[in-house]
Amino acid sequence: MSVELIPVAGLPEVVEGDDLAELIAERRDLREGDVVVITQKVVSKAEGRVVPDAEGRDAWVVRESVRTVARRGDLTIAETRHGFVCANAGVDASNVAEGFLSLLPEDPDGSAERIRKGLHARTGAGVAVVITDTFGRPWRTGLVNVAIGVAGMPATVDLRGTLDAAGRVLEVTEVALADEVAAAAGLVMGKAERVPVAVVRGLEWSGPEGTGRDLVRPAADDLFRESPLQAIHARRSIRTFGDGEVPREAVEEAVRAACTAPAPHHTRPWLFVALESETARRRLLSAMADAWAADLRTDGTDDAVIARRLARSDSLLGEAPLLVIPALRLDGAHAYPDAERTSAEREMFLLSGGAAVQTFMLALHGQGLASCWVSSTLFCKEEAREALGLGSEWIPLGAIAVGPPPAEGPPERSPLPIREHLRRA
Image (cartoon, rainbow, N blue to C red; front, side):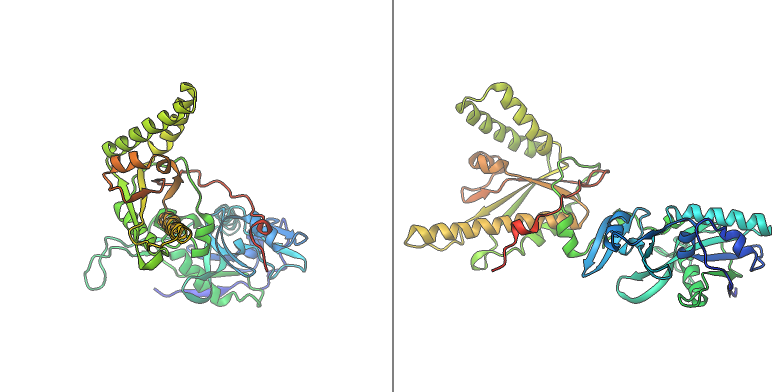
């Protein structure tokens, strides 16, 4: 198979309302099986997705983003509502009038399908259409054209289960055919040459037609969803969980991460007890409930109020897919003759416990799991130790509910009033 790349030159400056299918058909004879490749910029212009820059680019980036993946200086890598991860959510000032910005099409796949039908009506040729944008790539320098909208051809070709040239079964090979077409067409569609359309001729494929959405990696398979800094900002305390289990290996990785927290005197004074059996969980929760109820009755709290408080606690700790109890011991603490230094030593160990708990939850988040820390066991240490089979040297540090995130995602975090929390001297 050989492939021909044909630039479509001579298109006028595209404005809102222009019929791209008509403009292309007037300038290029098309054949059955051609792939017409069109840059996002002219599609956005024709669809009125060019906006004034009066509020500044950053405001538009926020509007066009559903999630920030990474940020450095004035560059934001963000996920768009389409699922694309790209610089500044696709908001771009190149090749538009001064003072304006272009946004990605609302529905690139829908745009590709409309143009494909329009070209067929005008030429009689059954063609495919790929809409492209230029994306940067992790681990690679430079930009490359990728497909964001596809119609009339497969977006991917799944070769898993077929044989390679040596007769071995391919196990993971899934070719991003539409991206390969987009990158090839980019060779004759330079940004400065005013050639926003090209035809790829001679391409052969098999398989069902696809869409640009097919090229978006599912979140569950994405090992690199956030930069380390963004992961810290993105973690939320989640009190309701989605369906599914918590993999043991995920908890082990989180404990390994937690044990990197700073601690006094080169110690690792932490323990994480994962309550995997319902019997162990109920034993702990019953012991805690009895201790809380006794304390509340001593304080004169009404039984109905006690029941409501216990029910609220049980709805989180009892229903989470996994409950983990962090604990700390002071065996490595130095003994001092004065009370002040002895108290400071204890505080250092308690701070290290907090650092380990936070690191544990961040590591869970990095593996796609949600969590919520509650102080519960701090108020019934003796009962918690007995229920968990821990020695008297261990101090329970609350409880961590763990599970898959809810389908609706985490709640939005309100902006931080940084001046209330940062002082410069």
